[in-house]
Length: 313
Image (spheres, rainbow, N blue to C red):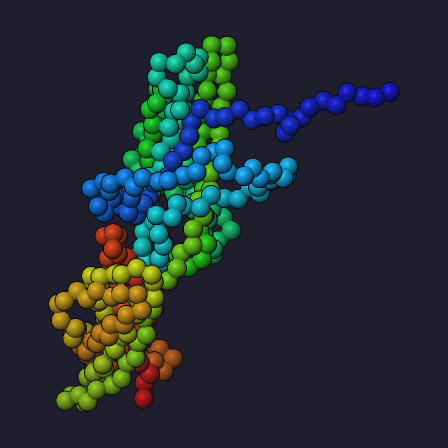
């Protein structure tokens, strides 16, 4: 006896969501501005009539597209180590005003996480402006109510500290209520981007002759190479010394502009202040080099090296 197959929930057609999610980055916003707002004159096109074109039969094939995380739009540009990833997340109520839809959208919440290469556990990201805190600490955020065609906007910021693939996971949860029932709906979107290195730093330290036999001096040279794809402007290069040392920059006050592939050389004079510095494994450590820059869109970047020093001879 044949049994009737019960349709599963997978076979059922998914109902489209009443709330959509849009992601907009700062770079995308600035780069989308027209460079020449003057409209160009229309160029007449001479096209053949439809009946004069040959009819080409198309094969009856079925295309199956694999599911993959959406990538940021091309205007997003490149993400570099030392910069802050910033974007606006916008949850929109797609029900148009004036329609006879019986649905009501309420309790809309946006949550964001960042998956980085060095950790298998995603990092929860704070959103701004923050939601009003509930009266009870154990009570969760109930979200906001959205009328027809209204939206909820949040801003997410994340400091990029390592190279590799990053995935921004955004979850939207809302309550959809009709005249007879109500349900909680959730959907999730993934935005994947590659973070690259923007600055390569090469350093070399050498001793200098000193007039005092007890206090020593060194010259610390550093080469800064722009290995990214964008032009940057150096905001400042500072040698942050440890206790017992002081440094003097010999680089002037200008803010050089580095094109992709350009190299800038800086130099510092390092001196002992209160007697001989502390030695660690045959090496004396001065401090760290801090580098700040701005991108073409005004976005800031910051990089700090490891401990710098010289071998004890």
